[in-house]
Amino acid sequence: MALILGMGNPLLDISDNVDKALMEKYGLEPGGIILAEEKHQPLFAEMVKRPGVQYIAGGATQNSIRVAQWMLQSKGASAYMGCIGKDANGEKMKACCEKDGVTTSYMVDDSTPTGSCACLIEGVERSLCTNLCAANNFKVEHVQKPENLKLVKEAKIIYSAGFFITVSTDSMKLAQSEAAKSGAKYCLNLSAPFLMQVPPFKAFILESLPMVDYLFCNETEAATFAETEGWDTTDVKFIATRLSLIPSKKDVKRTVVITQGSEPTIVAVNGHVTEHPILALPKEKLVDTNGAGDAYVGGFLAALSKGLPVADCCKAGAYSASVIVQHSGCTFPATPDYKF
Image (cartoon, rainbow, N blue to C red; front, side, top):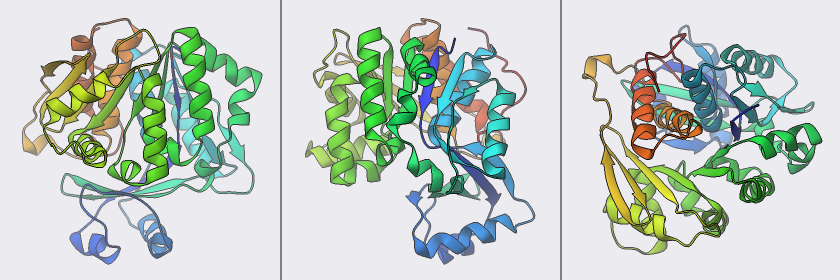
């Protein structure tokens, strides 16, 4: 039985180290996360032809689920849903997850290619440009199939990155309502500033918060949320506190987890704030920060699935993030050097 279920946008990461000229050619910013427009389409063909290109199963939610599975080292402890195309890239992704021990229940779109994400790595910074393609076509009807609804009902933790808001809010609402019935923990990540800057997406975040037990974001996303709410502050602890105090429709207090890169992680529960250290690494050990935030969530959820307290969840998150930044993309060694 899968303890942790992820629902999101499965993407095949097409990753390589690039120079500033390529970034500037397509108007991409270091640390940026955008959805591809028409002008970005030639970038994908260009990335595929690069000699150092790597293909890695990606998409924020899928990254977190793969890392949680790796931390737990128990086949089938996690499951994942999203939409892929009927093509070689979809098969590559499925094989990657199955090798990791993740139970996949992909919806397959026969007419649209599997989504991909161009990951341009410049130094240790990265810029992500996403072509959702099939990932954009996920439908709630897939979740409602008996075998998939069973995964939803049996999960102890259900997680989606905020990017899924652009695809299937109906699926997220269904998961939220099933979690409320079963007592599962519903977890959401704010994921990117644009989700709070586009009014319909922001409206869904506000509608969802009363159903969210664990809210994840980084300091930039937290500041963007505060700005769009008119809170007139960039104080991360203050923002975490206010987010934790937004009324819940459940009888549990929301936990807000804000990562800050190399600075300590801020956690707020019911207005009470704690700080949790990350594992600092020397600069020369940093290979790629792509997936560090996703990996933190993966480690955190793995510990949470074992019923561990927040401090231990943060410790597991810090460990998994520290491993992922030493590898290219969201990849990891065969087994973690970590004991719960």
